[in-house]
Image (cartoon, rainbow, N blue to C red; front, side, top):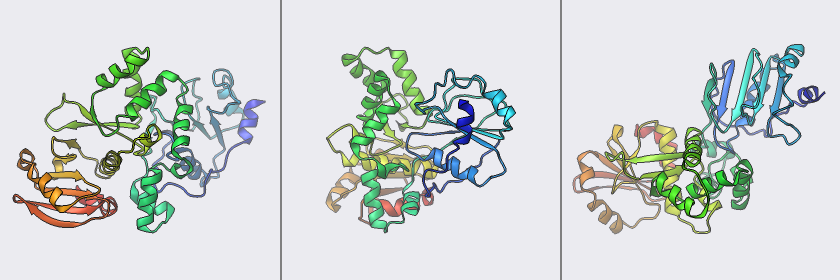
Length: 353
């Protein structure tokens, strides 16, 4: 019987290395986040330490399964076998969930299910990346920039990453939307602008476009940053993997990649509102801090750029200039500023709350 074979095929963790994340699991859990974040490995490691539970694991992306037909008897089977815990990977609502003492669902999309505890798995911060791979600090930064911030990142090159995204978005319309969103990484843009551009080349309904974009946002695969005090203006678009654009374009824009790196450290490290302005890449109202992302700077260029910041000085107590490896301190028109290498910032991001 198929369900018996699945029960006997409970997997071990795929990798000895594991994410350095707290995992406050309850009886009914919904684990969600983008592809490549190590969600499944994290869950398998966690439950490996609870041998008393009789466990069953189902991967709905297994090509040998038909989710619409194969699990009609899942409730009676689990009762007969006294299953304590069912893990459903790549979950989609194909069938009614069985009533069990423990259920853990894993998916990219946080489907709404009553009484479930939702846990978002974030991408790797630079600090976690360095802890997992144990590189020398300079080497860690080079690898982080090259391979990105996914737990599975070093197993992908740009081509494999694009193919992998196409595999998880087999619908050509959804993949077209995703690709066009990714090509706007780091730009000030509106969803309407992207929709109109796609519509020129592809037949696409507005409802379908906005529904898919909403799913990506709920999954925390993409993020929109508002312009400060201009809620209706075009927003900046960032992704959970800052290297994604390299997988879809031969054009390289290191400034956009660097900016996305910084955004993710701010978003997950500080958990406070983040805006941009005409002259600042990021503005943190709670910290009265203005941030410029300048991976490569010359002092004269920096002073000229700071001189052009006028209105923002009304609400910024200080400026932080983030670079690849330069550091220093100074003052411009009465406002102090700090120049800091990205690695130093990322390893101490909580300092800026």
